[in-house]
Image (cartoon, one colour):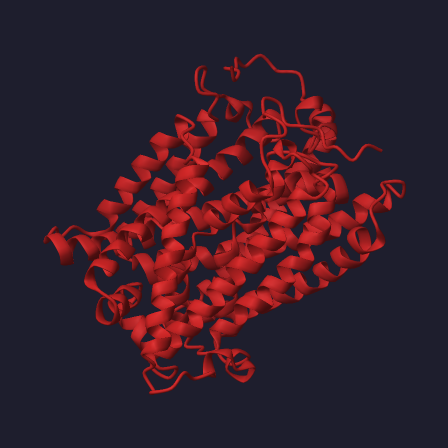
Length: 493
């Protein structure tokens, strides 16, 4: 069997190298967003002072996952990524179930970012310009911008992403330097890296927000049909991105515990929220650097919002194209080739969720961002576990593939066990993300992922019984699309 994956229809092959994929995946993970939003919220909701150690541990688990994931990317190329992998490795009905879970997970992480963006921008504009608007006004502004870009297929250029990423990393570097240079206890404490502090109360909350911080890092395989060397590029890009982000997040989380004092870090983060990072920069560096960090934080979140928006639209397009979901979802713009139907659907869903949280008077960071990040973490870990199992199944039926035993069996098998163990911790300790009065949500929110997955499995079985042509093409990409049922489509030019 050839090791070259079938390319996506309309995608240009050979245009991306390792550096491009590292840039895309790291930028999607948005390092400054993780520091200002994910890490501060992690401390605030969990109360766990050993959170910094979680990042290298999670990076190792994800690196083991990447081994089999990258190996399979040589043979399967599909805009639906996880969906196509599971369909080809565990069966088409399982693929449909995974696609439903993916839609929930990636919508959750994208929509949750609107709460984080709105809260930080509202705080900054009120403090610096006296413009006092509720968080949801800025969230809706961001939603409008992202929705407009999505239907016009406006992607941030690699050059702009590189510039923004370098500036973000410089701000994080300054934060780390001033934090370690101004320890709250007089000396740099190692409490943030103590395993006894990590494996304590609040572990589930730490791991959930830690996993959410890495979401996007697995996206390299989506571009496997566009890279110059699928055999090596996807794997190396994944390892490099994981090494960089894992080290960056761990160092920054540790630095935050040093500058605020490990015992006080949870309370300080809860009181100030994301602002704690900017306050440290203003106090120990310069107010101009703090202001620059605010601006870069906003651009970082916007870039992540656009990335995940386009990813969800791409998933919907792939499912519509293969007739798993209604065919209108594969409608694209005549001039732009943008997945217009998928983009509009995602925007409408995001608007509905944001409005629901506004009407319920819930907090944009500790409720909207945190709850949906937890749901996203549960969904992504489940998807990764299924995908690792699918890698084993896929190569078991292809002994002539030329892939070694570590890549096709041992690593994905180990990843499946590790990820399932992580999933159990996330679900059992989900209440670490919630306030005491929200305890029923400890099962309802992660349960949503399971319910949607079961609905997807059921729909896959319905397709097998009543629409065999559609079922046969699941996960196969454009080469085996089901003949159109009459709906007009605007094709990419």
